[in-house]
Amino acid sequence: MQTSWPELRKQCLILEDEAVLALNKPAGISVTGERHDTDIVELAAGQGETLYPVHRIDKVTSGLVLLAKELKAHGELTRQFNKRTAQKAYLAVVEGDGLPDRGVIELPLSVGRKNRVRIAAPRESIRRDGDRWRVDAADVLAGKNYPSVTEFVVVTRTSEHTVLALRPITGRRHQIRVHLAWIGHAIVGDPLFDRSGTHARTYLHSWRLSLEASWRSPAELALEAIPGPDFWQLDGKPLGDTPGQLLGSAAELMTHTTIDGH
Image (tube, rainbow, N blue to C red; front, side, top):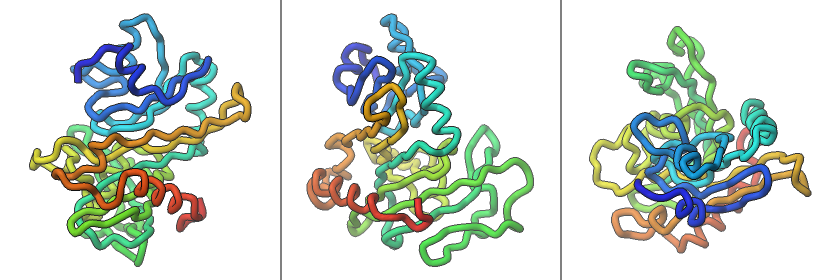
């Protein structure tokens, strides 16, 4: 995606203060560190603006990304991600129906050949117990693995797809994408798992983020990135109700206590 930094900054701005910049990133542009790609940090640097990513979302993922304008704020915010006190929520459109209204995917991740993230257990060992997916400890492969938990609620269903609101309790690389694919409900258009090339985008969106921010009054950041119209259209057909109604349903569902009490 070719664009200028001033244009991107203006079009995508959610919030800015003396310490941070929050953007609603379009799908198709990297945050930082992608090989052979121009990214947000590089675009900003080219215009004399230094930004420090507080977290990352994948190039194919749209939505909320938070960047610090100073190192003090960067340290304060990244510590909350490291301690898992930052509250994150995503929206996704996945293949198929048959998911429960609420669920927990508790599957460890590992990194395999060519740096690919995968479940750290044989696919056939994944068990669904009601609204929970897991593997027995004896089935976890030897080597380095990372406990990973994703919670979800169903926002709406069509005959072939399901819209989910998700909360990654851990924040592993590609966690949501891998978890959903390995339980048989890959994200529509995800290039890691959908090789059809028939969809214009990957239907994963970084939706909400809440953190403490000592320099603000009140001392918090509660951010939300509204998905663009392209997120709510699949193969030219709307995904159920109007975007406003679907977002309202997702927000209401996410306010209720989830299965593990988070």
